[in-house]
Image (cartoon, rainbow, N blue to C red; front, side, top):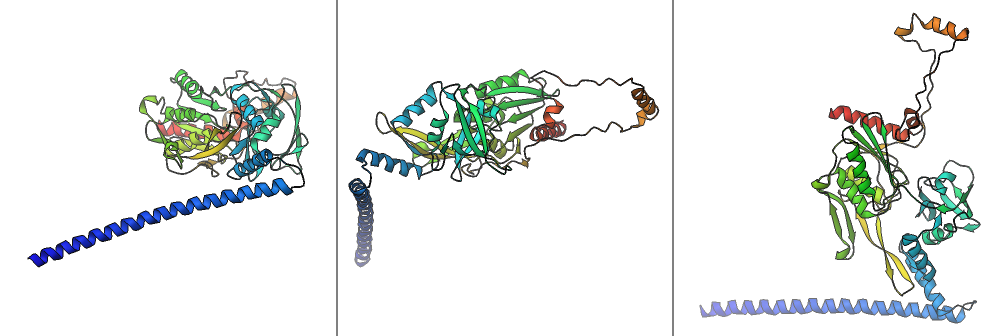
Length: 438
């Protein structure tokens, strides 16, 4: 028995010894990995310092160390992704004006797509919209300055200016054989983010042009105002470049009563967030169609993608832009900052928007419907009187045409829908859903 105890104690002692050795080995490996990382960082910084020193000493032009550092920072940030960049004193000042002040501009949102400066969307009733700029237009030149290797912030700062000053934008457009030059006069950008119209007696059309701080409230008011007559809703997010995330979340919450709306994931735990729907915020359960196109970006992609994942609405139109990342501005001095991508958005199903976009349930290209009225079409009820009516026309007694047109800006007419095939398709789907729902 004593021998067995000694054997058992021997095994226990051996186990403890192995555990201590294993723990010591792991600790040593961790320390070694940490030391290697630190050594690698020091080598990289030494290489950077050496290159800066060589360029400062031998470059053909006399460049200061401050200028070299700024150029290095600009290059580093631009190569991270299309939305990260270094903000010089001038850029940082412009950004503050953009977010808090009044300025003259064109009324377009731009982004980088396949390395080219691209119009995401012209905002409704702005100088750019009136001049004919379209989503997907590639900007080659701003005045006489090429946009090659130009950052988004640089382009935006050039396009902004004094109200009333003209600007020429040279663009490449799909379907056009040569570049187009568009002349625009800068104006003060004031945007009506939400407006509503009715289609027939029971369909409510809601247009959301961008996501400002009152979007969800305005949409909620519109739905409640027409609640007694509304059997279906068309939500138009075409050419909507995005805006405030909380407004996108609140807008989805109006239609969805539970579950995830969107999640935000980054490297750091504090950058991870999940936004969910609440039944108390849901206003309506009527059938819904959402219109999107290549100009629908960021917040509008979150809305359309979340509604699609929840099977709450039918998405109609064209594939969206694909901007699903989160940027923050981090000051590095009192006058300079960096704009850095810290996270990406993910839809309820877990799929990403970034560089992918939202694919519609029903793909419909933009365009109009060509209609032709056959004046000689004869129906059973017309057989006896048809020839008499034709004789009246010959004798000069022309039939008076009924004018079905209306000047009411709150109503979408049949003619308007024929000019917008995506809207007409959306309305036809809503009508079918209303019939199915009963």
